[in-house]
Image (cartoon, rainbow, N blue to C red; front, side, top):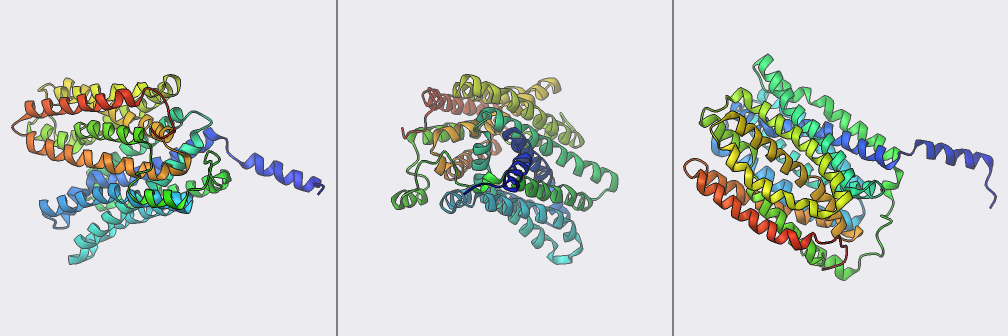
Length: 419
């Protein structure tokens, strides 16, 4: 059939509106930036905010702990669901919408009387559910976008933009609290970046129409047998992927959460509570810069660049528990570097290790295994940080030796074949 000039004009117009891979990656990064302002701001202030509503320390621990558990473990369901249904885009939008709605609604809870604490707790849990709904699908979409640019660089740029939101959100809430003496106005203000994240998502969907198409790297439909295996937490994924997940879990177990370190800083009188958000912002800024640097190195020299993570993690407790502020800040900087690599180049390598049609499942399994490491590491640090810092540092070092032992043979080559 002969094409008319109007058809050709329409094709050219659509082509001019379609974003390049780098434009798509930056667009997705801006979505993450605005959304991170919400949920990192919420995570930074959740404990004090629940306390103002009458929560006990036990209630705060249960709500925040359950929220993190939901955000990680539920990905074992949402990852395979995205791969089976091919609804990666829809799950991404739903997940971000849950964050954009739930966090600003926390501003209403102080005015609900006795029901305020229950509603706030529910909103926090729903926001963490939204994180679980979108994360595997979002990472799979980002892996597709970044294939032409180099996945290390693509994930690195996305992570760097993500980190801008991760430190600006908590600082925004801290600033509003300092000016007003109240926590809820900060949550209300976060409705602006929440709405912006959804607008950016709509623009991204329109400018990158191929997101709704099947992944061109997927070679064949997933068989019924493979779908059954997928429901069994990714048993059909390559053995190399599972070894890499375990190595990452060991590293994560040693990479203490900022909350644990901040508790020690304040208890020892080394830093004031008012300085804690600034120190956290320092770590997040360093993480963003580290993601950019290591992403480029990953694309140039391959996954062997990831072997720097265990030594970095092993050094952190030796510095952050020193009695000099300068050493503490250096330790936070190294902690930020390790976090930046963990959340960028590590995810890029996951995409290389598994078949294209199984990426969302793989990201769900990877997050769950990493989450188990984080929970174990948090319990370990909480038990030893007060009176047994030397023991804690020794255990973290042993964990990193185990991580390196798994990581070294795993990163010998890039592979997408079971192995």
